Amino acid sequence: MMPYEEALSIVLSHCPTLPTEKVYLLDALGRVLAEDVISEEDRPSFDNSAMDGYAVHWEDIKDAPVELSVVGEIPAGAEETFELPRGCAVKIFTGAPIPKGATAVVPVEYTETKNGKVLIKETFKKGANIRRKGEELKAGEIVLQKGTILRHYEIGLLASLNKVQVEVSRRPRVAVLSTGDEIKDLGEPITKPSQIRTSNGYTLMAGISLAGGEPHYLGIVPDEPDKLKKALSQLEDYDVFITTGGVSAGDRDYIKTLVEEVGVKVHFHKVRIKPAKPILFGTYKEGKGLFFGIPGNPVSCAVAFDLIVKPALLKMQSAKDYMPRTLWAKLKRDFFRRDPERREFVRAFLSLEGQDLVCDYSPKLQSHMLTSYVGANCYMVVREGVKELKGGELIEVVLF
Ligand code: AMP
Ligand code: MG
Image (cartoon, rainbow, N blue to C red):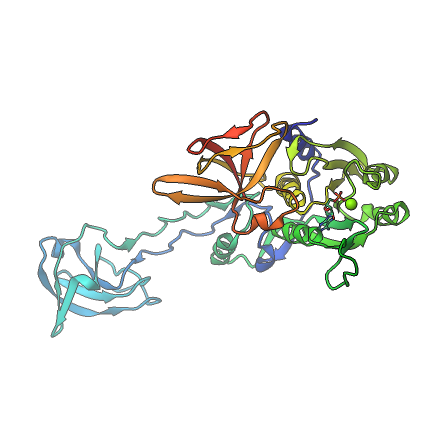
């Protein structure tokens, strides 16, 4: 069976590069920047005060305490033409331009005012509490690089650069098709105890949106070859096509045969991971479309998405950071498993205990238990061949 790294690298090597488009700033959230964004000016664009207080000549306060005459005030947004005479202070507010000659700002907490004078109670270093022109950014500097995934921080930063529109990669159009005779959609009546309310389609659609994709829900199809084939024949309309269920070795698992019939070239079926072992990957549209057949267990579905599909969606959008992020943490308690054949991804909780990053795992280990994700923030990785992990040992963790 194929190891995880090999499966992921096959998928990544088949990711097409999507074209780019211009969108309004807020529509760029969660998407991948397709241009280097350059600052047109220095930032700050003028020297300004970092505090509410008094702007002074540093030489006048270096031997504080000292009393200075107050010669007015400079609010944020004021003109920059003011010149501060020696022996004087001017009241100044956060963000207001520093008057000519001033070389420090004394925060208001270190002052006292009485009849037109201010008592500076403590000395400060030369340049204290002054934000210098260009200290954050120089004109012409690259602020955000092509390939950056845009979070709310970057959206704010782009706004501060007056970027009304930004160039981003087009969203991958991703079809989501759930399969299974027993699976019922939201709102559909459950008439037999053996029927199951779907979760997979929704897990995937939500995950796709968060990864910058555009989910298209194709509903639930029963395990009937004709109906499945009809649904699969819509492949061409999408960049990525994902099915859940029906991809294992059961008699009613038709996905593998059917996708080949509709022209998908299968690159692998089954990966040495737990859960999600039966995952199938193929390409269509001369390699421009990616097909993922994901097993139906809800945890398998989420694991397959996080570890294989999501990196592919990000790579198609030319994201720089498309690989799952890993780190090391101290295992909280012993872990044991009978069968060490596959690499296992266990839902787990990372937290800080004293100086240590500690990882504990969910008591719900099985792949039908979606509740194992409640409160979880990572996967604990149990490598192939490993039966036992000891509490206190350093273990590998994949962040969600
Ligand atoms: P399968 O991969 O089709 O053998 O399904 C494995 C298990 O996952 C079965 O218990 C199914 O009932 C369950 N399952 C399949 N599809 C879904 C779905 N969309 N939502 C929740 N559970 C599902
Ligand atoms: Mg099934």
